[in-house]
Length: 56
Image (cartoon, rainbow, N blue to C red):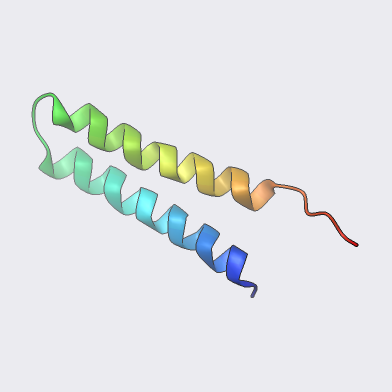
């Protein structure tokens, strides 16, 4: 597996962890921010995985 793919999976895992922990642990005005930050990481990781590569 290439380094870029490993980083993509790391971003997805980080986003999942942050979204889950933000939903359970944060309260008040911080909760939507934590969940949306985690969901943003998941979306960015998925888009990075689906990005076309340029071959030489």
